[in-house]
Length: 118
Image (cartoon, rainbow, N blue to C red; front, top):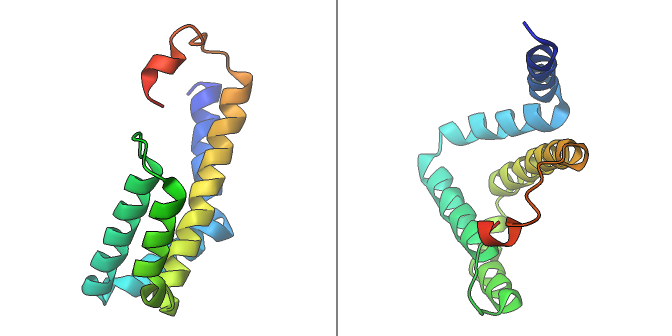
């Protein structure tokens, strides 16, 4: 086993053992008994993702306000809020890992990066 593979396995294990990930797993388990609520959460997540991924000239602030208004009552549910907050913590952690790696690994894509729709 090479060093990168060993370190990757150690990183995966560390992520799985961290509080943020364990909290997220607990939140997922609590939602197993409520598939309708999980479906609503997934719909909210989908709309949020679509809003963040808009490439059109739509007003993102206006779109965000609409989502916040439409889901304000829904977000008051402690199961919903716990799930979404724990998911966000895991996402931020994974983004930081990715960013830290990409900050030191030069992939030489500057000449065409703008064409990648990232």
